[in-house]
Image 1 (cartoon, rainbow, N blue to C red):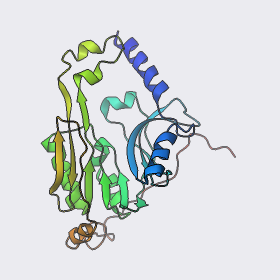
Image 2 (cartoon, rainbow, N blue to C red):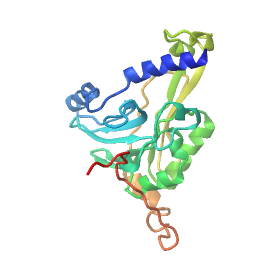
Image 3 (tube, rainbow, N blue to C red):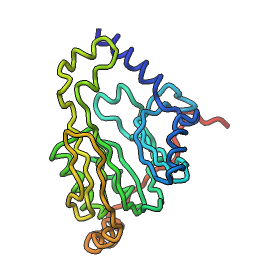
Image 4 (spheres, one colour):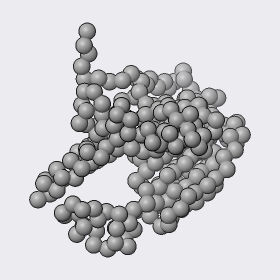
Length: 253
């Protein structure tokens, strides 16, 4: 039945999940160091320590030195995701300084959480990564709003999925996607400039690499008229408090 299928899928997901303390991302870190490039990447993470069998929808930022500079766990799994992933804490709500600029990310529908976005804006984000499952003009419109609101560059790294990608060797899956050519998700990777205009993409229903030249001077130009954490803020009326402590279920003294 469905329960047996979900158990088999979860067992595989848990077995293949990324364990950071174990060094599962070391090959990617080594590649980043060899090529002196920064990497921002979503992972299915297996929690370490207490709750080591809990999974998290996480996002890592790796520097050109091969170091993992930030690990953000999605704050709130969306709808049925709560049957799979745990909730993250605020310890990963960070913006990282890189040679390319100040970068940060929110995962999928976290980008609809105004306070989470504002927490990144307040840290001077310049390049905002938004890895979604969503696609289509409505989603791209949301990314354009974020770029305009924050006055920063926004990268939407789309999730390109065809029916053939879903036909893994677990009984009960193949019949859910009988058409191998069906576009389960068309992708729609896109780069948005600080004013909200599309700078590259969307890359729709096609595999490929999307390139854009990012001019950080445009961030300052965009915020001249609208800086939502600066001259266009009212801290005397509104204030946001973010708890960035690691949340542990047990405190041993």
